[in-house]
Image (tube, rainbow over all chains, first blue to last red; front, side, top):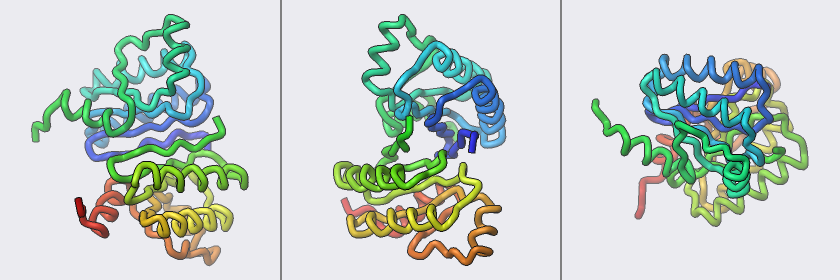
Length: 121
Length: 121
């Protein structure tokens, strides 16, 4: 059960982080997600963090890494569902989540992904 | 972190079950989900169980309960992402998930929900 599922959502992939991440799990997620971006030809990745009460530098770095890997695979990453308290803590800690775009919820995240890259097919 | 997030996906709600459920958690999920169906005017509920290696009678009953509650609130429930091994075990155990519709993945689940109730607005 120690696996974070990656859900296909049209041309995008959705990852909902619900559990405390540790190193091994973050590596496994990165590996599986990059694989899925390629096999599913995903144009974007939505990462839902609405369950997270805390986003520390470890999670922040993991999100940045995923966004960077997705970018070189030609997919954009949007982090959605951040709790207000997390936003407060992030700024207080001086963590700005560089290279990561955020949206209030999945619908807005999908709209952002659709807007940033009009359908070419 | 012991909370299962409920994600809004257009006119539907998405619940991704990733952790071992226990009584308390199932009750909390039912309560929150029924509340969200009302506040978000959701037309359907998608329950992703792709992380579950085992669906026993407890989970089966919980899914049936959720589907029943959603139905009286005028929302349909589709369970998506069932692993092949779970399907095998369910049939071997004689559990048929009464009253629950299933789909291979979220995209097909959304198509099923859209087809069963054409947009009225």
